[in-house]
Structure formats: structure tokens, C-alpha cells
Amino acid sequence: MQSCIVIAEVLRPQGIRGEIKVKPLLDDAEDIRLFKKVFIKGTEYKVLRCRTDAAAAYLALAGVADRNAAELLRGAEVEALREDAPPLEEGRYYIVDVIGCAVVTEKGERLGEIADVLSAHTDIYVLKEGDKEYMFPAAEGVLLDVDVEKKIVTVSKKRIGEVLVEQ
Image 1 (cartoon, rainbow, N blue to C red):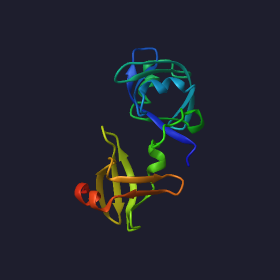
Image 2 (image 1 turned 30 degrees about the vertical axis):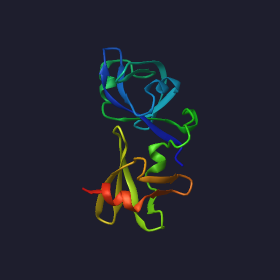
Image 3 (image 1 turned 45 degrees about the horizontal axis):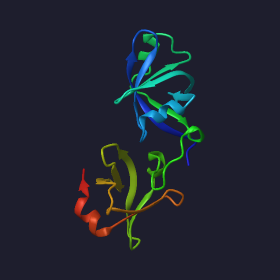
């Protein structure tokens, strides 16, 4: 498992004092307040202040003193150490742990590998097999088991056949 996880995406500078507006990529946006340090473009930043609203979080970072410095971070991923992350409820997984998992049916038939996870009301898994890419929802009835330790996602052959879409 990777030691860092992506917790947000920098949307834009907020104000003139270097604060950045970020889109939290956590189940609960309030959890972003738990992180005391973050990594953006490989640089570690101490979080000086954090506030949230319904759609975003606003971070003041040590070393980002003005709007120009904040602008350089636009579009970047905000990462944090896994050990600083809140514990997950049973049946919940960090996206970084699902990417790279083999997808198999309940009978062991290999369908491919998870190449990406698109955030939506129900996450959309991008399945890659050779040169082809498919998408399917990570919905109840489709997913039977996710074992991030063994890197295997087990799906229902019947349900995956009903919802799998080729890109």
C-alpha cells in the first residue's frame, strides 16, 4: 500500500493572502481538518488554517504567502500521509488501494484490472483489459468483495454483464 493518499484537488487561489480553495476527495469533507501537513507537487506544507463549507475546503499553508504562490498550485493533487488519515468504516477503501486490483468474477474468471476510479454519487471503476477500457459502477450487487490486501475485486458475472460499458 502506498504511504500517501490523495485527499483533495486544488481548485484555485482564494483571496490575496495565499489561501487555496480545494475540492475534498474524502467521504466527509470535514475530515480534511484532521491533516496537519500535506504534500503538493512533492513539497511538504504545514497546514496553518483550514475551514470548510458544503462544497469546498480552504487551506492556508506555510510557505504560500500570496495569491501568486497559490496560483502555482492550481489543479494539483493534495496528498497526505496515510497514517494521518482517519480510519475507514468497514467496506470503505481508499481509491489508491483499489487502483491496480485485478477484477475477477465469482468463478475466478479474470476480466482485467482497475485503472482508475471516477468520483460520482456511486464511484465508477475504470476496468482495463489489454487495449480496451470499460466502466462499471461500484454498486451493491455488482461488487461482491474487495480485498485490497490481495489486490482482487470480485464482481457478479451476471450484474457486470448488465452494467459494463465500453469506452
